[in-house]
Image (tube, rainbow, N blue to C red; front, side, top):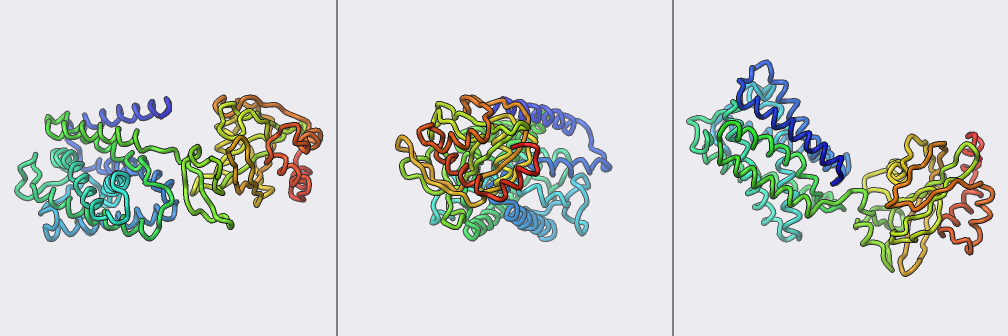
Length: 433
């Protein structure tokens, strides 16, 4: 994790602890029920983002919708029939109650927890034949989560069980119900992933919302003097943190394998994927010009696995599974060169190449983008050893000679750009080359 991420995370935890203190010590008036709705939405945002990065926007929305409706159905069933949690009732503090029974916030409140539990189970128990083991593990994990959540919720008055219960007002039937609902949620996720077949492993970021949720309710338990939920919460937080550090991967560090028609067929970590027989994958290449008609060149960092120290065009990189070429290019420009706000046009959408150096192969479908800027580059030393602006016409001549040592993809790209009507039109429409 970066220093910025740690600072932001720490700030969020301070806010949550402060909110927990007041919720545990101040009676919440009914007119403040909108605050709970806002909190539920905010808690759900991190896991929704992680789900979008994992499955794509359409499937993420679909999955959230299915799990949300399922949560409402199970909760409403329990309120009417007592199954599976036992008889209980919601107060007005969780927002508007649909049909006078279940608050709308339930639609988003359960989903982050079941996605976190499933994400953990999917990484710890792999293999299609072990689906039943994953379902059991998801149920157990959810019960552990609820041992922290439910006592605080009852104390604050979010809901009440008929006749109370032995565990800080929570009956054992509630935890049995969580075993059941967890198994149902896990079954839905097993079926969903079986048919949708995600190409990325379940990301550790799926636990992000749950980490903050568990911290918040552990803090409420602490300020309420409920020490068993506090201790359980602390253990859960430590285990979630350890899991995150062990299984986290950066989404933009996963390259996308493709077939001949550029259909995604798999993913792999970037460094491990580049070897003597690198499979075809998605990438991009950028040419940046300034107002003088000069092209920005970069010398690749000396620590690069592929083409270290070689001079090439302005910037190159890989496209994330559910991302676009233009967004990937803008993100990489900012990361490598500190340049933002550049309009990029895809000039060679179908460029592809294969090249080898020092036993390492590049094998990419690599659209070429062109942009114009007078921004001063601020190179990232982990990626770029040096930069320079060069005269375009002179570069066209220099790069054509392999003896000058430019990257092989830049040599091919320049040749194709010079033959491109789209490039010539773009050049004429800008006050550069």
